[in-house]
Length: 348
Ligand code: TXA
Ligand code: MG
Image (cartoon, rainbow, N blue to C red; front, side):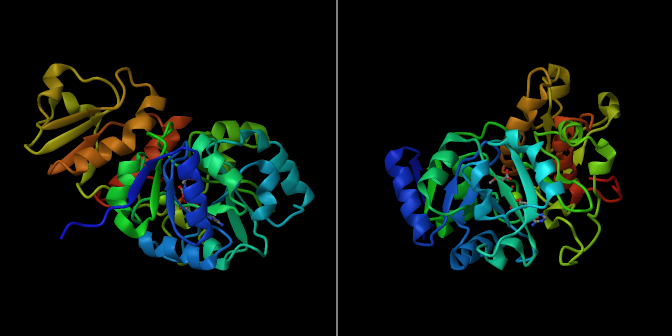
C-alpha cells in the first residue's frame, strides 16, 4: 500500500491562509523557521497540542516552545507583569527577537498544562523566518511548535524532512526552503535563581552572559544524568541521547592521518578533505569548504540524515572548539553520538 503523504505547499498568501484555517480547526501544520522546521498547533487548544505529542511520539513530560509574532505578544503565553528582576533581565535580551532565542518564564493561565508538561513555566520565542512571522500575524492565537521530527531523531531543516518523518500525521507542510541556521534555538531560563542556559544555539552563551552581566560558567547547567520524568529536571530536552541518527556516530580524533578506516564508514567533514583522506571513506559530506561554523551548522542535520540513509556501518564526524557557535554544534554532535559512544562521559 502506498503510504499517504502530507501535502507540501510553497509558502504564499493562499497556503498561509490555509495553514491558519487548519490550525484554527485544531490540525497540525509543519512550518519553516530560521532554526529548524516546527510542528505547529494552536497553543491555546489542548486537543490540538495533544496531537503534537502523538505525532512525534514525544513523552508528555517534555514541554513545548510557544511562538508569538512579536515581543509585545509574550503575554499570550507568559504571566504578566513579570517581577522587576525578571523584567530587567528580559529587557537586556529583548532585541534578540525576532530570532533564534527562547526564554523560559512563568506561564499564564491560558496555556494548557500539556504545553508546559505541568510546569509553572513556559518557553516562548519570536521567530524571524518571514513565513513563521506571517503565519503568527495571521493567527489570533500563539503557536506551540517543537521540531517537526519523530521524538529523538534529527531535527528537520527542509520540508521533505518533515514529510519523511511525520507522513500524514501533519495536515500540511509549508515549504519555506532550507532553514538558514539549521540548529534549534538557544534556550535561556530566567527565574529568581538567576539565568541559566538550557540549550546552546546560534545566540551564544558569551553574548547572553555579557548582556546579563554574568560569567559564562554561571549560565551553564548540567542535569543531563537525571531522569526525564524527575520534576527537578530543568529542561527535559537536554537529555543526552537526542537528535540521534540510527547509524552509529563517532567523533573523530587527531589520530586520523594514521588510522585505518574499515569498509562501510562515512565521514562528515567540517572542511574539505585532501583527496587521499576522502578516498578512504565510502561516503563523504563536506559541511563547509573552509570550516566556517555557520555553514557547518546550516548543513549538519541534512548531512546526518543523508548518511543515515546510506546503509553505512558507522559515521565519523569532525569536532570543533566548544565556544560560541561551536558550543551549539558540539552539543548536538555529542547528543547524536550519545547512544553510540560507550564510556563517553563528557558534559553536554
Ligand atoms: O528552534 C527551535 O526552538 C525549534 C523551532 C521549531 O522553534 N523548536 C524546538 O522545539 O526545538 P523542541 O520541542 O524540539 O525543543 C524544545 C525544548 C525542549 O528541550 C524542552 O524540554 C524545552 O524546550 N522546554 C520547553 N518548555 C520548557 C520549560 N517550561 N522549561 C524548561 N525547558 C523547556
Ligand atoms: Mg526537538
